[in-house]
Amino acid sequence: MRDRVVAVSGPGRVELVEQDVPELPEGGFRVETLFSGVSAGTELSFVKGTNPYLNVTWNPALGLFQPGEASTPYPVTRLGYMQVGRVVESRTPAIAVGTVGAMTYGHRSGYVTDPLAERFVPLPEDLDPMLGVYVAHMGPICANGVLHAAADLCGTDVRSLGDGVRGRRVAVVGSGVVALLTALFAKRHGAASVVVLDPTPQRRAVAEALGLETLDPDADDPAVVLKTRWNHAAGDRGADVVFQCRGQAWALHLALRLLRPQGTVIDLAFYQAGADDVRFGEEFHHNGLSLRCAQIGRVPRGLAPVWDRERLSAETIELLRQYGDQIRKHLVTAVEPLAEAPRVLTDLAERRRSELQVIFTG
Image (cartoon, rainbow, N blue to C red; front, side, top):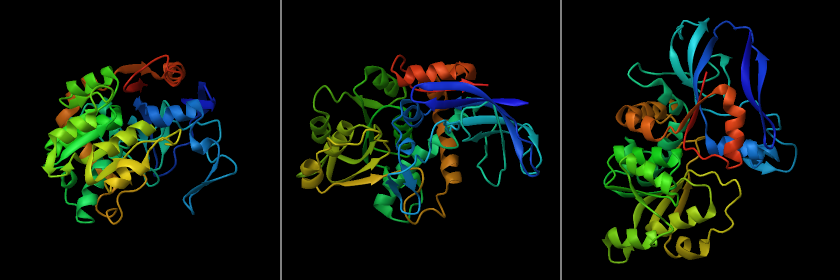
């Protein structure tokens, strides 16, 4: 028996290879893939050759990138983290055959794993299993961003994801999957206003179809628009919190300009090309602003015992229960067989094709 696996052998070189299925170990289980979602930012960075792990050494002890051999050299054979599979064999009483769950094992037709080593999140029967691609990792990325906003206000006493957005004016820069799910989390948890800013008309149309207000940053200055609208006190105007979800310097600069004095940008973006054009001598300095990176590798300091990855997945399931039909209709823009993955990923990387959310089947 062999599994089909999507592999990147070099910049612009994506292929479907076959690998022998390992023997099922005692305590392990095997899944057959139902759905596998594409995370365009992370995955395409490997296809384009822009991911820093391809070029330098990541030193986990120091938390530094350093000159040396690539930490993740080509070929990359574990591409992606948005999988849904059905259990077809099991040697553990904890995971029953037939269970459908979310995992993070990359684009492949099947996978053998140990539940003590990797996460498996069973999906409830009332949830569209295709939407399960968001449950293990992508949804928690967005929930973690909202959690960082809560920690910014409440420290370690965060009781709900709504603690950072409830009753507050929220701006979201970008309109990709991370931005839209983050905006929906803010809306679900009681934000007084949520405005999504993106220069692409098609992306803004999707946000509007999800019931979100949008602004075009290339039209009237959105910082002037929102600071005129959102008045807190004399000399105190703008967004209470901005979620920055687009990995480009202009987007971070815009996010800083939208904030009220002493406000915080929660940054979920991946700056593959750096951010040389961010002008820290302007609004960032003069308005005393804060910038917090919400990276899924860690929740805010002191919250890990309470807000673990399982809780963030549970929050994602509740978001999908509320908005699932809209997300399925408007966010998922392409469903393709796994056999088409090399062509689709290459087309996306080379901008021959534009999609919001691609999902591979089988």
